[in-house]
Length: 183
Image (cartoon, rainbow, N blue to C red; front, side, top):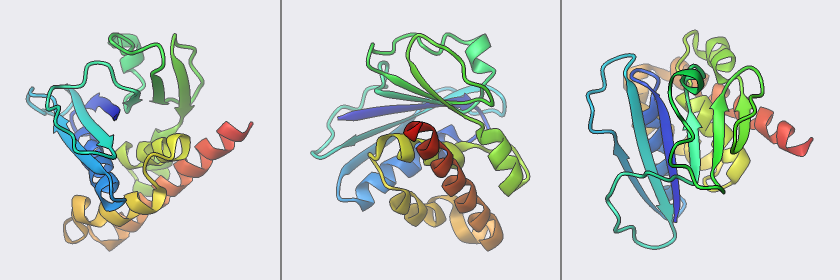
């Protein structure tokens, strides 16, 4: 079983991002489960979204305390929170950061904020960071994420243009991480 935690601040899309990952896994014929931190999701407060992905039924419903992957949406959390607490030695961090940071765990940095601003006009980075996760791990494909976005973001709610902008941000971040991993 693969366990993923998306960690950000209220309004950045950590919970929706976890939901997209779980749903994309289901689209691929896997089992997916999503949960969120029990705290209130007021804008700016720390928020966790959790996703589990497996090839067999997932029975564990407990919060994820030692994820295989930690996706950090807000780069300032590196300085204000102990983001590595509870991680396994083998855990990987995917960090939204314009510069590479050396943490104790394997870390992939991508400037998802700049990509989101370029495509969406605002710093909502969850979609971009899912592209980074897909590129790095291959656990869920870019195609599956693109397939579920309209359902989970609500094409009618956000509009066709905004949906296309999210997909453009997703693809650009995916490409950037693929290039980084080849070097």
